[in-house]
Amino acid sequence: MSRPEVVVHRDGDLLAAAAAARLVTRIVDAQAARGFASVVLTGGRTGTAVLEHLNRNGARDAVDWSRVDLFWGDERFLPSGHPERNETQARAALLDHVPLDPSRVHVVEPSDGKFGDDPEAAAEAYASLLASLAGPGDDGDVPAFDVCMLGVGEEGHVASVFPDSPAVHEHERTVVAVRDCPKPPPTRVSLTLSSVRRAQEVWLMTTGAAKAAAVAAALDGAGEVQLPAAGASGQRRTLWLLDTAAAAEVPASFRPPSA
Image (cartoon, rainbow, N blue to C red; front, side, top):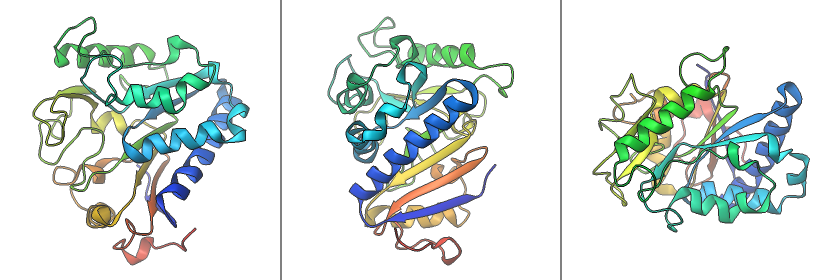
């Protein structure tokens, strides 16, 4: 696994704009190297803001969107089109504005989809999808995503993997149903940390003083059971993208100049 790197931006809007520009570059590079790119999207304020900035960025059209595979790190198990679904927010922010190949937009089944109100079945189906897309060179039943973007919660959760939850103790399955989630809505479907760690690059993006303690603990060697963000790392790169408030308690060895 890679050693964490920290990049600090003045505020959340600048962070999102910079992450959007960084994502365009990463996608274009991957397409140049092997013809396609794969990205795991995240929801939340920062994740959605990144997609909104990407949509407004003139470099957006440098990407061949027909050769991008999109996945989600987690999804709120709600009906299709529900405004709180990460998919719905991503479509409004970017996906509906670029010429994607619909067959390469890999969504988690909604609660009114083919499995009805059964998040375990939706999780198993997403795990099967990931396994079907893993190539011969991939290690295990998950594609080696080019980038996996994650938000970080105040208590250190990533995707829908919360501290000392069944999901954080899961080491066999690649996707799990999450019930009784500490944050609403209570039912979700999430990649496990082992799936996150298959990504070539993991970007942990968060803002605000309320996240500073969790960020510092994750960078200072906390265990993933108590702080799941500490267990989110990429094969080649682990990048923490922070605003100045979230970076306030970062250990001295990680402190870069502010951007």
